[in-house]
Image (tube, rainbow over all chains, first blue to last red):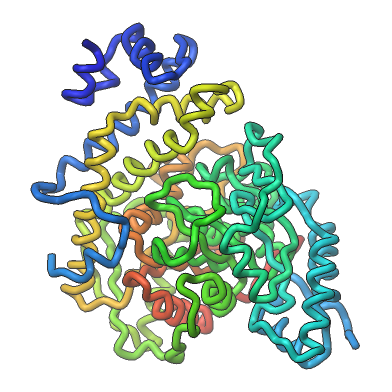
Length: 76
Length: 459
């Protein structure tokens, strides 16, 4: 259930401690309660950075192949 | 055959090459001078993780024999260089500055970029200190030659410190969020992050496959370009040098974002450098790249999950090999949703389009910005101090560099002055993809017009 919620809305940080530890274990991480606060802090920072991307219009934009010149060849 | 030992630091590759070819110095003597400088400074600077003195002497002996026989491999022939310890050197372990790799086996072969250096005749002095897995900006235990109580920046902090201290004439670094440019700025060296994909990453321990670049740190723009030309892919004829006139060159100054929250001395030195570029004939244009902050975020949203993926197996099987801080970071990055990562990859395309549009709209050859908003912090500082408050060291020092890792453009940092306590200040010059030649032309012109690049730390 927790995994389905995460897959749907990406709100990992909102999971209760026990669920977050449980989810971490399903992907092979030996996360424990002692380190959880530090992990939550780092994860929250990354989610905040990700939220800034919401300002971009990504309609129709596909991940690139890494070539930095591609964007310079076609008019934006 | 030899005269006095060459004076270090400050000896350029170009000048050393002249000494080697006119017979007034040998590569063996030059290498011994570098090793002596290293021995005299390492207790304070800690630039090197491993020194390979004997193989360096052997390579220098071969270089001298070849030159005497008329086999000249080019500008790097017989030149002592350092290599960041995330880059494989055959026969040496690549420890990446991490205790988790203390028992790493020796590399079976050279990284492609090391092979290119050797083919160019360079003499490899040793492996330089990196921030752990190249994922940070402080690079302990390396220290800043201008003040050993301060950081050299990072993650290529050892490479930068070695160049500034004179224990290498140039060094290789890697740059994923600013790791060449940041230490270059903080130690008063020149650092060139090439266009993403223009230098092979084969044999380089990854931090982020989508952003990692390999490039040089050196004492002058000319030297950095010489090293770049030796390692770039595909190999070919050197880029044309169009002279140092900047007449007709249009430079954008993106004041929103890139001039927000600077230490006053940094702002003053960078503004002076921009005026100097104008005096040299460049047309200076104020521009606004509204996606700059988003571009920085894009870089981290891509980089951090990729870092977790690099270490996925170790994190699952032997997580105790990581220190507590890195382990928590890797665990957090592993929990980041895949959809978020892919949004980052799509956003990278969008910010690349927006920066290309900015250059086209204003017909720009380059953007010029501060490399970093502040000078080197104390080794134990967690924050950068500004008149209006503090900022965490990592996010502060990567604020102006990471946007151009996201876009993949070439970016050069050159020294343009000092703050009131004598710490170096850097200017960042950002060009169009694969136009390192123009970036270096602008940097060389600015460097020629300033005395900043001619001062060296008194160690």
